[in-house]
Length: 298
Image (cartoon, rainbow, N blue to C red; front, side, top):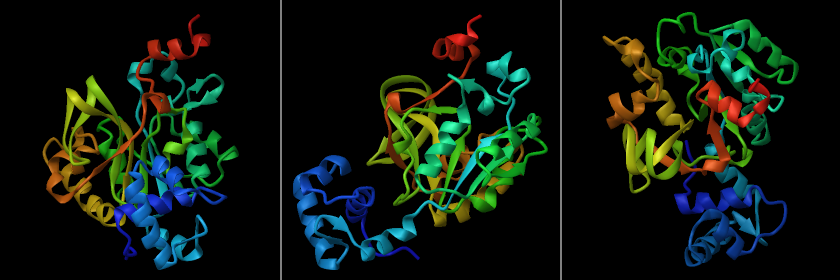
């Protein structure tokens, strides 16, 4: 059961939790993207509740945040990565090295930096190659997807469907530059996205901070980033809805995120979590890989 703090209170406490020294209300306003007037009001309310003292979060404040802590991370990593051939003939896309580091390592390091140590990787194509990760990340547990080559990524979500409460779900082929976009706490289910005037990629129509439509291409929209968070309640619903969608005619061809955003959207209210172009990039093709890492351009 979540503690009784509202979103404004959560935003202030989530800023303070990462600070090891007292913060001014102006600094809190800048980092929380709240107005100084709002911060002043909410700050005083949190002081009165005993959640803040002397510009720092208290033990009571940490207890109030605890129900919103991310418990685990799920990586969807079973696919072939066909647009990255020839490099993926012998290497799963998440294990491809960019400037000497495996793509997935940056995401794993970001999770650990945020205190998320319960990590699952759903694997399929060249599954045994993921064992190499255990030398650096011995906490990883693997989930096997035996039908990765005959179904879309919803089949991987079926494998992890009972683990989705208080959980991040990652596409495992994202090159992260800013690990701070992975947060210790989330107030509600959300999807990372980048504000765009125009995009030809998968994107969201958004109203009042919540996703109302997923589509390909659009104007004045939010480009989807393959990282989402699901709170306890939505995670439980997903465990049923993913399996039910998968078992419908044509269900194997679905993308897993279409379950909460398209096919069962009436059951969910998914917020936007904003990030920037410079924070993260998806390397879709071998040409894009060569542009980022010229060592492949031989």
